[in-house]
Structure formats: structure tokens, C-alpha cells
Length: 431
Image (cartoon, rainbow, N blue to C red; front, side, top):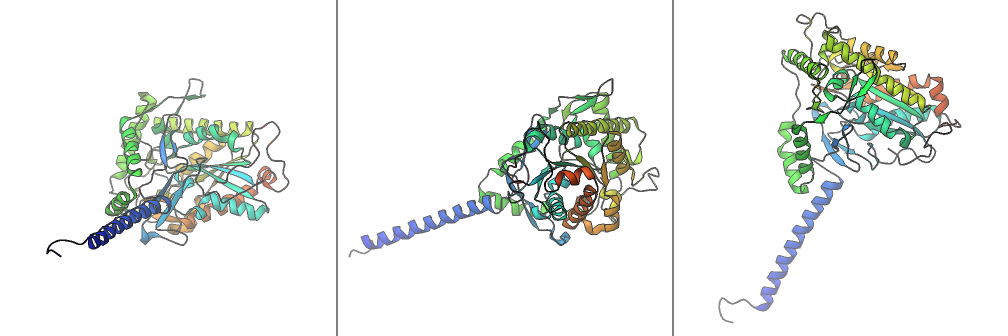
């Protein structure tokens, strides 16, 4: 054999090894891609812009919500898989079944509950408790959307009520920021006769760009998303507290939002998720902007009450206190020395009063969360319930719902269900 030449057999073996190595790498990358999409959908996007609702869920979407490990309690997870079904509601399709009674739950991130596993969410636990108490199958339909105000919940109910055909509607009101949402979302205003008037807001360019960037990140290769996810981990570290002057910034921002909408009639929407504590309601309840928002709130809730009544479906509101007011040691505080007119229970009482004026009934969860202490909240500056809080809220609401005769009569086995002439009634997919 001439020195420096390679035999055909040796060259063939080398080629085979290269091919095997390339194939192994390709299969590994394919495995990572499939695993990221199926089991660990980091940087996934579950929301999209919507011309009527401002934003809505993406049917069939999935994402991973990372949580701070040091703040996890019983039932909490460091990585939460958030799945949206083909119907647009959070769920895995395992609850309910043929003949199940449907409880449609509307609200914001407290209902969507992206910070806890599905089985520990308020909606799932509420349905499970009603199921046990009544001895019948109950399907909890999670129609929560992070960032929603009651105005968006009203529009979503109008869109979905006949398709879902619920036996009971529960609407969760978040005292922390729901009043302010009405000025930020710009979906409704009051006419000269005090009636609700639908507005046509436009989404700002910054919002469109933000959602486009999110969609691009969600569509990247699994390996790229994994690398980016771990690199961005330091940026996701929780904030324990905010500076003392933050409350002044909240008041200034809320005043500007009210002026922009109610006075200047500016219909550009610039924020969907960046909600702040409704400090103006809690501190300056007689301010003109506050009174206008509360009057608008009453009419939004009244429209929801009237829609449910027209379909013959019981409706129940749940008022959730703000962590600022109910969570000991929360990272956002109101200095009583600087703001002596602040009342910690005012946000809840104003919403309860608005429900009453609208002709509805409500459950006030203040006592549950004040008595439960900090152990029912995520902590730091995160305003949400943890898994323990989800359980506590669901237990209280279930107990009060069962005290309403029309609710227990509607849900119990053998009840008539949807009145004649109302579309729906046959169960669909579980949420």
C-alpha cells in the first residue's frame, strides 16, 4: 500500500461514523424540539390581540410559567404548564363529561391562575367542591384572561354564553385594579342618559410591536428558546418591595388615565397587562375620575346581570381583596402618615356596592384572606393567590353558592337545566 493513501474500507467506515454522528445529532435536536413543544414550552405565548376584546387566548397554545422556588407552598410548582384548549379556555380536557353541569368562571389572572397547576386553580377546586357537595358532575370552565377588566369579561360573556350554555356564571372582580381597567381599556363609556355606550378603541403601535415580538419568540426553535429561557432567568427574579414614592406614581398615572379617557376622549389603548393598585379609589374616593369609573363599573356589571337573566342563568360575583390591603407584609404599602384618607377596605366595599346597585349578588373574600394571612399569597409584590389561597377562595365561594336556592336547584342532579328556547345544553369539551 502506498504511504498516505486510505483504503476504501477505512474510508467507508469513516463515512459511516460521520453519518451516524450526524444522524444522532439530528435525532437529538429533533427530540429536544418535540420535548420543548410538548412538555416544556418555554417562552410560549397564550395571548393574541383581538379587535373586540383587545386581547384573547390563542386556542391550542401552551407555555411554561416559572415561579420563585423560595416562595412555593403546598400545591405550588416552580414550573407551571399553562394549556389553552381548542375552545380558548384553560384546561386539559379531563374534567366534566357527558351530562355535567357547567360553571362558567370569568375574570382576570386570578381566574386564569397561570401561577398554579391546573388541578389547584380556583376554577377546578370550585367545581370539585360543588361536585362533592351536590353529588353530580360539575365542569368548571376557566374563562379567565390575565389582564382582563370586567368590561372585557362582559364582552367575552356576550360572545360565549350561547355556545357554552352554562348552568351557572361566576364573575371574579379583582379589587386591586379592576376599577382602573375601565379607563385603560376604553371599551365603554356612559351616555348622556347614563346608559352604557360601546366605544371603539384602537390598539397602540407599541402594543402591536410587543405582541409581534412575543409571537416571534414563541415560534423559535426549541433549542434557541431553551437557551434564551435560562439566560433570562436572572431577569425574572421576583421583586420584594417597591420604593416609598411608588404610591405617588400610581396616583399620578391613574389621574392621567382618567383624564385621557373621560375628558380628552383619547381612545388609544397603550397597556393591557401593566395594571396598578387602584390607589385613587382607596385614597381619593371623591375625585371626579373615581366617581366616573365607579358609575361606569355599575353599568358594566348591570349589563352582565341583565344578560344572565335573559338567558335564565344564575350569576354570582366574587370580590377579591387587594394584597396591598389584605396581605401582611406585602411589598406594596400605603403610608398612613402621608395618606391619612386611605381606607384598606374601600376598594372591596365600592365593588360590593356596585354589584348591589347593578342588581347582582356577591361574595366578599376579605375575611378569608385577612384571616389566612400571608400564607395564602404568592408574596413580594405579586398580588396573586398561591395554591393555598386558591383552595381557601374556592371553599368560601362554594359554600355561599350552595346557600343560594336557585343555584343549588339548578346544579343538583335531576334539575331541569337550560330553560326551553335557550341554545345549547349539550355538553361539549371539558375545560
